[in-house]
Length: 377
Ligand SMILES: CC(C)(COP(=O)(O)OP(=O)(O)OC[C@H]1O[C@@H](n2cnc3c(N)ncnc32)[C@H](O)[C@@H]1OP(=O)(O)O)[C@@H](O)C(=O)NCCC(=O)NCCS
Image (tube, rainbow, N blue to C red; front, side, top):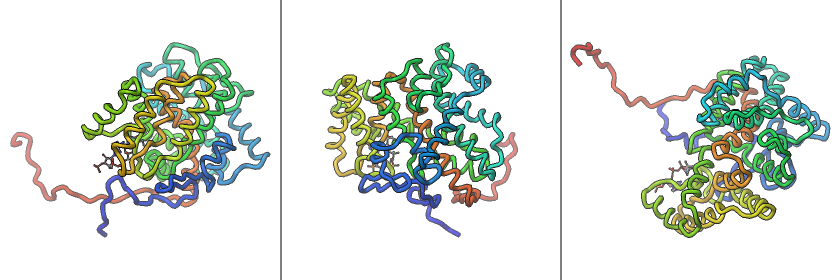
């Protein structure tokens, strides 16, 4: 049966899902029907992860159990740490994360994905252990010992503690938690789709998440947040922003942190992140990168007027992480740490009515070619 080919599967539904929804014209993002702005104002990352995974806001008892389970599964096996010690320290943190997550699957009996109880514990482990892996890698590559998690600290506080061995300012932990909420889920994007393709073979969830991490790494997806900070540092000062943007657009290149397949207005997550930047700077002083970013946004707004290209989620997030002293190549791993709950929510949803992904192709090659012997080529 002939089909229209849609490059990048643009506009082609790959699933029916009740997890999240984007209105790209009005700039609205909802998780299970709740606006992300409201979740940032009232919820926590762990509560939002529960909402995504299980479809409803947890009761007090449910939240207590979920928080307790995640908190007590943050530790990683010494063999995972040993594995990371063997990786080249100049390698990308996303590659280390992908390798460690794939290896996690060898330690846990998560193979039978029809077992609901097993699936719950796989979700707990993955949500709990990704931050520990990211923080461990951040230290191991400098020859420093990983810092074990502290059970008395909340999810975001503990992440900073494992990274720096000190408990962060409560505002930092709060802002970071909001960043995780904003990155937790985003409908049918490249990494979610990649995970679902892997999941459709009934592969275990560690393999599913490792596949998604691979897709998230690229600069057209999660990797853009790193490129934005590199770009802002390259521009240096706000007065150079306009000529830089003119140069990029004049050379028909893409401005990193701008544009989106679905949003044709400013990404609502970029708006919230910009507000978070301002709250952070009020407490800790501004960042020169922010001044440059504002000018880039202003110049791009004028030069790309009417094209529907506006700041996306990656434009302001890196400025926050940079101000918090987090290294640039950890930005995408932070994205993965948050998005794992969205990936797993889609995995659980798909398992209820799984069908192996097996798309079609339009063959554009030849037929009936003769085999030419090597000596005659
Ligand atoms: C995200 C992205 C891949 C989505 O793009 P898409 O839906 O595939 O759209 P296209 O790449 O086909 O772009 C459509 C048009 O908008 C332009 N455009 C899109 N994003 C642009 C950007 N960031 N800077 C300048 N122009 C851009 C393209 O050049 C193209 O123009 P044309 O029609 O004159 O040729 C794209 O916007 C991009 O590469 N952005 C930069 C990377 C980034 O920030 N990624 C994070 C996404 S959350």
